[in-house]
Amino acid sequence: MPERLPDGAAVVRAQLAVYLPEDILMPSAWPHKLADAAWQRPKRNTNMSTEIKTVTGTGIPLLLDDIDTDRIIPARYLRCVTFDGLGKHAFEDDRQQDPSHPFDNPSYAGASVLIAGRNFGCGSSREHAPQSLMRWGLKAIVAESFAEIFFGNCGSLGIVAVRASREDLIRLAAAVEADPAAQVSVDLEALEVSVGEETVSVEMPDSARDALVTGDWDYLGQLLSAADQVTAHARTLPYLNGYPG
Image (cartoon, rainbow, N blue to C red; front, side):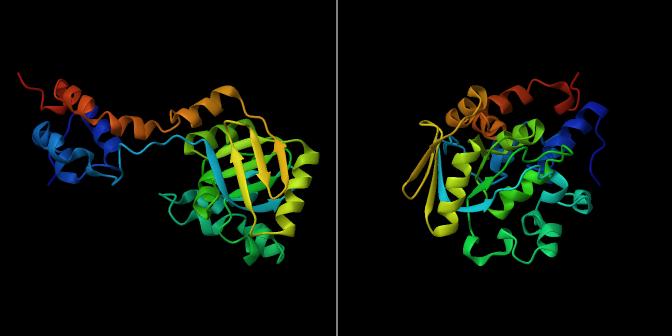
């Protein structure tokens, strides 16, 4: 049976349970086991840069306005306990109603860059919406405008969300439709999107752009890269050390 934890430690344990093995979460294991194995999960290279300066891949056009989060991921999927598997349900209801929906078009399978319209991601603030798009495979969205909360959620997930004029979006969508295999490049340093012979200027708030370019968007990555400091600080916390006298 797990050891009973004080209330404060129970909160910490719940927050860390996603990443740490069960035995490390027992008070008796702190801090000596933490130093050995606490930061082994999730498996990732903590020295790997999470800077996002460019996104390159094929595109998918969906040049419609006011696409809300309920269309992106239906509300019935909000009951899931993890985001795993959400990608296959992106735009599920729209796809059922429209057999020609781009997300069902094999020509756009594996696309990384979505070309969208005005007020993309409006409606409820569900994080499931950008999560489903990311897990479908999207790494960037080029739209005329974004709902504010959706835009913020994209930034927190490392999804590039840039704005372009309607005229330029029409040009980009036409280029992708003409050649679905063409590579679309989103350059955050130059603030340009190019596909084939088309290159257009895009906009992004400086704070959001800087966070992606510098890697500051990845809060978990920052935490894991500071594992030694976190471990050292954990040794000083009474509620993680059984409240020693």
